[in-house]
Length: 283
Image 1 (tube, rainbow, N blue to C red):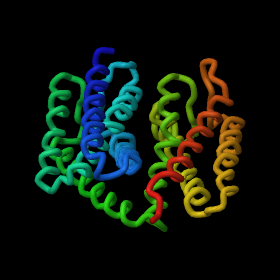
Image 2 (cartoon, rainbow, N blue to C red; image 1 turned 90 degrees about the vertical axis):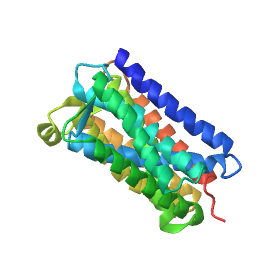
Image 3 (spheres, helix red, strand yellow; image 1 turned 60 degrees about the vertical axis):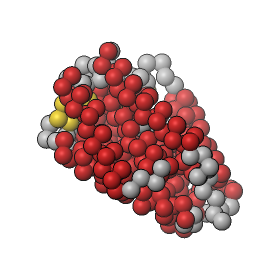
Image 4 (tube, rainbow, N blue to C red; image 1 turned 180 degrees about the vertical axis):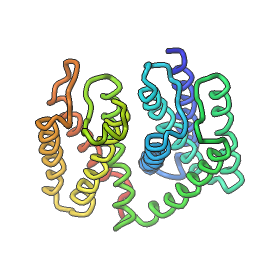
């Protein structure tokens, strides 16, 4: 378990730096704007990690919490990609970092990666340090460009895309937590045959399912403005999860109850609706 302390410490430091930047630059943007951007940029890293690590096994996190390598990868992903990348993006926005600051940030990212590698807390497969360097630069530049766009254009497609990312992290976040806790999994036979691992195959199914679900959520919450349309995501969630549970796509374990999963999803939807309602209000 000692390995995970390193990951948790790095995550805590990253989020502390972001919190400090937001506090010091609280007069520059509203807290809600920083929050939306933090969640948006975190989702970018989650989606990138899904491709680079989940589908192409580029490297491995050695968190030490399980004998299963994908359980370790999942926890490492949750800790680092929900902290380091969005924290760096938030600092960039708060302090208006130019290209030189972005390059320096990318270089600083290599330090913990190198240390973790040398300590046996992380290992590269086909991934390399220079890829991390350019990946951080690309992430920062794309995030900066989108922040300017979402802050100025608070309507239409720009707003819908922004809140699609927010919806995803709200809806998907409980799934890997419950999977790691041994409470539930998602299972499709053909996915399990291709990705022969309990944790990896479950995340691929839930990740894909939640991506599709978020399209529905954004349409009924962000595009259709009447209050009664917001009921649709709640009903959709209940219907789909019930079908999944009855067909053994969603499997409940270890004393967990199906109704708990339903309630968590309903709470996640409610949080998303509240975020959309009270943040980045159109002028």
